[in-house]
Image (tube, rainbow, N blue to C red; front, side, top):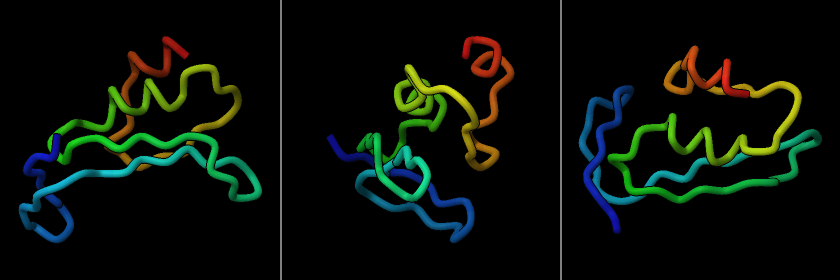
Length: 71
């Protein structure tokens, strides 16, 4: 179900979804999550990174010391 979200960079509210992708080298999409715009990135990151090994690169919204310890 879609919802209202806030884009910090554009400083605007929008309605819809956010797509989060897990991409491996050389650019192959190996995971996708489509969530309402108001869902925070951390729960989605846990789902996308489940079973992954190695490095994970994301912006500051994905940083969580608890998540790092659990992986």
